Length: 124
Image (tube, rainbow, N blue to C red; front, side):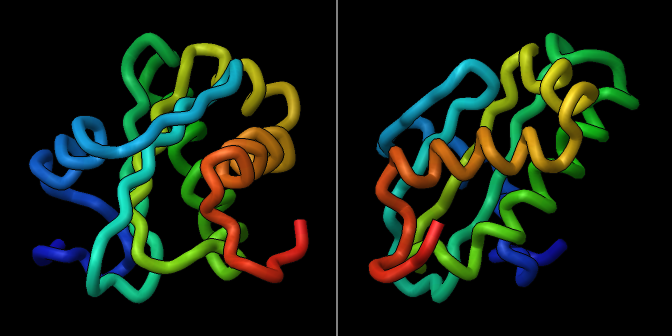
């Protein structure tokens, strides 16, 4: 993927580092969401961090796929101009296996609201 990754993803470690270092975080039992305002981006960009603590490759890929899909669902109602990094906690795997997309989407949506990333007038 090219720099700025056109599909709304953070790809370079420097981009992740900036969000971790200068952004604000909010968390629940399953996920930690870091957000950092950016200029010039017309839509929020997503970065994912799913460590081996979450499980093996199959489990991690499931969690990542569900997080990407949940973010894509939430994105139209989010404020533009933010880089977002979502860190999956080990409990995210249990949630993904137990409740699937709906469980992950609910956990992510809660953090988007807590972080104040919902656009004005967006309905939850």
